[in-house]
Length: 55
Image (cartoon, rainbow, N blue to C red):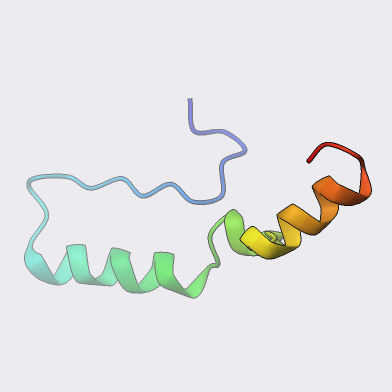
């Protein structure tokens, strides 16, 4: 199910607090899938839509 996903964290309820913190730190070192590409803000989206005649 998680194959190919870049931003997946799996927690075990049996983990100690230290293990949970270690997992967070390790996950935080890797950027999320959203950070892998440029995501336009609202104004950039409006400009792009105007350019394409969609707004």
